[in-house]
Length: 113
Image 1 (cartoon, rainbow, N blue to C red):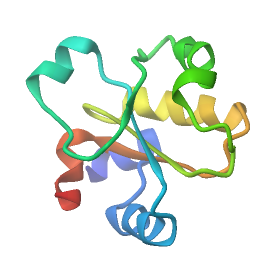
Image 2 (image 1 turned 45 degrees about the horizontal axis):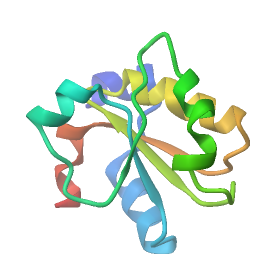
Image 3 (image 1 turned 180 degrees about the vertical axis):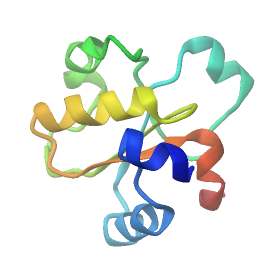
């Protein structure tokens, strides 16, 4: 986690937990590929919009149907390692979402169980 933290701007667990405590309506955004969803599951309610390292365009295409209309609603993005969710977090901020954290990979999020 620490070696990827600086590279992908990963939020530390205490920051994610503090956000969830302050904003129980925080949205989790899973940007992993469909095959990855079959391998490992995230137990909390979440939105899935598949992104790649080079293509986050699905975020804008699915904004009205999958993302909150209120840009103040916090979003916690994750993928398998943290790279794709880093790109997604940057794009979400560019779209006007005010609070977006990159939690890294699903394997990093065991503190949420």
